[in-house]
Image 1 (tube, rainbow, N blue to C red):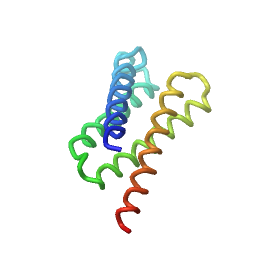
Image 2: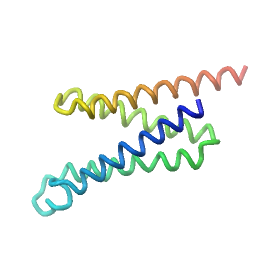
Image 3: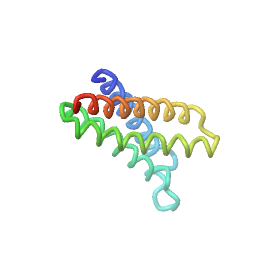
Length: 121
């Protein structure tokens, strides 16, 4: 589970940092300030915040409580974005990336709870 957790953190950090930077620096980002309707830029900052959870998750990776909190946030985020992109139907690559990340996170969540249940017995 440890190596899979590190893979998830690394992928999340890369994907969300690239997405956040592109959205903030893109044509609908900071350059469009003052024109209103800056949802692209707003999501860019949210993506950077979600990327940063990978850093905190790595620093405190030895603490199961932190791992579970990180996995919970990532599961909600990636599953939510996957649903949103599926409904919009206009970003297949992003949809696939978020489905993969949500699935990987769900697998880790399931493993973390089955592992803690077997340790408690």
